[in-house]
Image 1 (cartoon, one colour):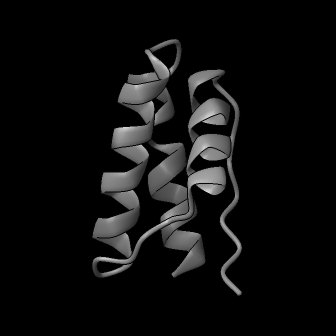
Image 2 (tube, helix red, strand yellow; image 1 turned 60 degrees about the horizontal axis):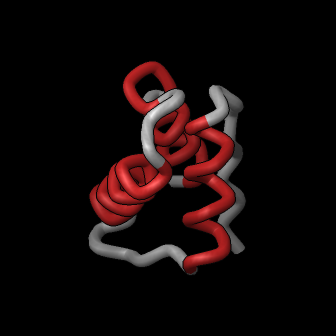
Image 3 (cartoon, one colour; image 1 turned 45 degrees about the horizontal axis):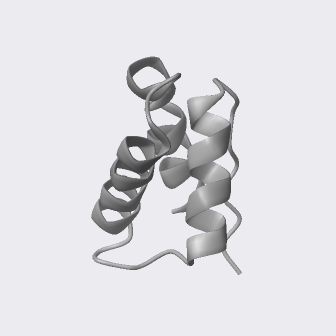
Length: 64
């Protein structure tokens, strides 16, 4: 599941790079929920992933 979620989040880069952080966070939250069967993400993780995507960087999801 972590690999699929990583791929899905990195797929957001083309659409959300340079966009307002709140828009990116909403997209990350939606993608996370979709790929985890309704699971949630903590705010620090959400912000970190959104900032990476906004900057055009790659993210890697590690589920514990």
